[in-house]
Length: 391
Ligand SMILES: Cc1cc2nc3c(=O)[nH]c(=O)nc-3n(C[C@H](O)[C@H](O)[C@H](O)COP(=O)(O)OP(=O)(O)OC[C@H]3O[C@@H](n4cnc5c(N)ncnc54)[C@H](O)[C@@H]3O)c2cc1C
Image (tube, rainbow, N blue to C red; front, side, top):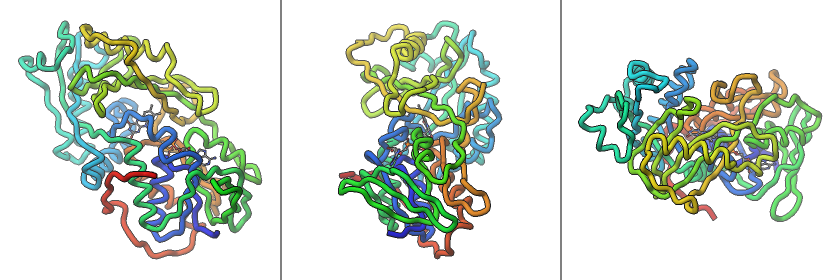
């Protein structure tokens, strides 16, 4: 079969590119080796957010774009993306003072275009005790603002389903094996349920998340292998011990840690640890589990936790290789093309769940010159998304 695009991976980025490309009128085939959202896209913190903490590293463009996409997803996918009030308690020994948090939240609100969903307030002292279990000693201020929460895997399935409704083909399971790139097209070989198959395309889009380098290694002639690190982020899933949502500062290293009720559980995360093994082997280590439990018990000292009921999951961030610690590295999406003048392979690495739609549009702009002129059939900023059953 001949396609304009073959997309490898049905995580949120692959699903997003497939939807945007099909909406733009291109023919698309998606190959997913496992199930949609089998990789990082089911192991995130489940937030559709601007990324308040990225203000500290001056990633204003990312925050503005994320807040814009958040506003859009709240409209397009109301069953999948819901606002929740997050609380930021500030203590005497917190690294960030009440003034700093207030300034950050004010800037956040401005970057949202003064969207009413980005307003915040400082809770009066009389209401602090209503936040069940929260340590009150040395508490100086509590801020409340809003973020949106989702089911990341369900959102990915909804976007992929939308791509299919717009005409995209999917081969699931379909494992990319190798590709041969020539000046005019790519010949892609993959393993499907029914045996070995081939497809040709004008552009191959590599959205294999933490497996990106493996995919690039299967492309002939050899192409540049981007220097990236895989950084593991683990979450704990506990019984529903708390009903409020918190954005906390880890006492150990001052990193941000979320404590979020989610689907009848309490989710606590995340960590940042270099991962050197195969992506499928990523797991929450005992050290990470203890770190997250320490954060939780620091702020909620009276919680009683049954260790038999502590579950966990771990996802991998794809970040540009750097000497900076993972927490301080930029979170912008990385694009890598084989040839700027006439791209035949585009790899999309990292980025955010929140900005998948904008990322897909940036990706299409990068490969436009290698694609034929087509008539757009839909606009992804207007396509509603609903939960779908996936068989
Ligand atoms: C711990 C953590 C927390 C995060 N929290 C948030 C958050 O709260 N909000 C937010 O906006 N972002 C968050 N992110 C970022 C976001 O989750 C990721 O950027 C996003 O999920 C990456 O999606 P992806 O499609 O690139 O990769 P993946 O979801 O990993 O998808 C890659 C897919 O490719 C498939 N694949 C691999 N190799 C092949 C092959 N050879 N053939 C066919 N298919 C193949 C895999 O099976 C997989 O399904 C978080 C990330 C991490 C790690």
